[in-house]
Image (cartoon, rainbow, N blue to C red; front, side, top):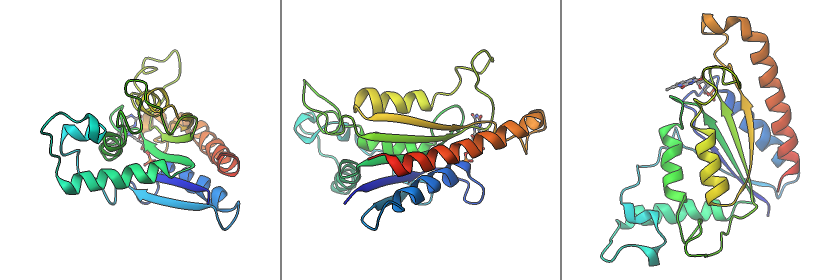
Length: 213
Ligand SMILES: Cc1cc2nc3c(=O)[nH]c(=O)nc-3n(C[C@H](O)[C@H](O)[C@H](O)COP(=O)(O)O)c2cc1C
């Protein structure tokens, strides 16, 4: 049964672009057949507790001597890891918040990047190697090469490092920028670009949802 793990993290429940674009992906995925399953987590509506214990960063056999993470935290981590490890494709809605990840998404990352389980430790295999991960990022402003803010997006690079470099996943990024063009007067002249990036992101999400996995 092909399974998509679909995460959203936008705090906007009415006009979020990342939510709309991940929904387009998930619709294309479901459209491939009745057995194409979606496991959905809304990290904003059902936020995870912050990582309770640093020992949870390590596989159980690698934890420091005497480490005793709380049972509920251990069980929650096991559930999150199972969801990820059972997924054929990972899809993340990732709005840019303060040049970084929404804290709700960061909490999820803290649970699932586990050397010795999802990450390699002393040469151990990486179970997610080569598995597709799609990051749908929505950014209010402009981050074009050559602009003063070209290096200010610390979200996509961090997700690429964790999911791609550390876990070995095959990362694709779908970007929609200038999302605040209708709201911030200084960006108003970029409204057309904003709309055309949004349309392109939906097309790309539909294509990927019909093809990956
Ligand atoms: C708490 C917060 C912080 C934000 N910080 C930034 C930022 O650092 N840079 C930026 O370009 N836009 C920023 N924005 C704007 C969002 O990136 C933009 O509205 C985006 O479209 C949000 O994704 P969504 O449409 O999926 O909700 C911020 C929005 C919020 C709510």
